[in-house]
Length: 548
Image (tube, rainbow, N blue to C red; front, side, top):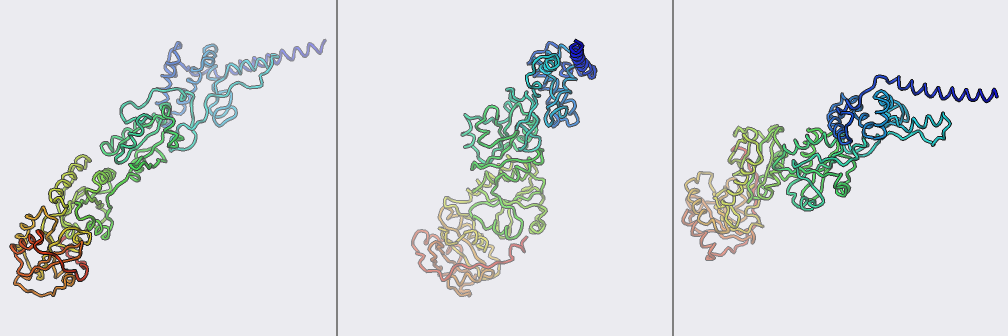
């Protein structure tokens, strides 16, 4: 009997201990947080009100946006965690704010902890019931209640595109889209047409409305799109709606940035999503067709490329928008040969010192030997203005050229022009070469021949002159001696590069004889039937350097 009474007293004592433990627990957290007030809500708030309030505050206090407000963020998250769950909210309403606050901080199983550490999990009604069952003789269910709702998921990252991140069940809900009509939205129904319409490059941001990092990144992304507005397109893809597209591009975390090129290849952005890194990413991966001139060899190669296409050199500083020039080079690819020279390249800039070039400036090269032409200082470094300027250059070049595509102005045939393709074996036009034997001025004669050249602007020919005192080996190509047969010491040769045949005019060279000889050759009255002795040979001169 005494043993039974002792056992009964022990059971009552244990039960009382549990009650005291729970009461002690409540008292420990006597100074808690009012979750309704923390979210700015009334106690009769609906579930929609709670979600809306949480969204607003979570964006404001998120650690990525306000790193010094982490405590506030956790309080908001805990408040939402409790009030969004009907059972936990009922428990909170029954026992008051102090209990809820204590329960939030008690328990275990937050991210990175097994009990008491990490962020903790809300004190569940099941836990209370389980305690009473265990100590009051009830049957245990073999568990300690539900684990917390915070968990890890590959959904967003503050830096790059890898690694798990802290995720809240709120993010599982279908959210209102964060992008309206600010940017192009790519969906399954317009995906193919968007990809096929890429003319230069397309930057794509994969996102989800429920991803907090995506929300905070929106402002920066729109700002970036405005920076390149007019020449680089920006788009977004909602991975919550377009899962198949996101899977296709191996999207594992959000936001995920890629740069899609015209040929459908793409580059992926990795790293911290700040303005400098994103600009550098675009700069490094954007396609271009211009030449960056860093030495004399590259300059010469640029000048001798494609004789019938206008050549433009941009003189810029490292502060100027190089991405814009890359876009321009692609827009005018095959219509304009573009080069870029930085003002810090002193050895190259020294070649233009007499021109007193300021940056940014544009040089339309008219003479590839002297590297002279029209210089325009670009006071407004704007894409649309520059695009219009280059369009005018293309149009002007077409007016200067007839349907055969040759320049009708009378000019000197130099080594550079020859290397650029003029009068070489793949040139189908007839070259009328006036060989000047003396190092003297032929100004009056040259003006007369320009008039002759303009009369034949619709014919497949070009009239050029060669200074023999600079290029003596040209005479050997035609088997001619270096001697004057006429007072002005001029020799006229009709040369067909494609067939490597020529004919020398027999007589004094003047305006009328040039006109008649050209007309007779073009009409077929005179045949070009002599085989060239050896290929034209031009030697390098410092002529154009002396002119700078």
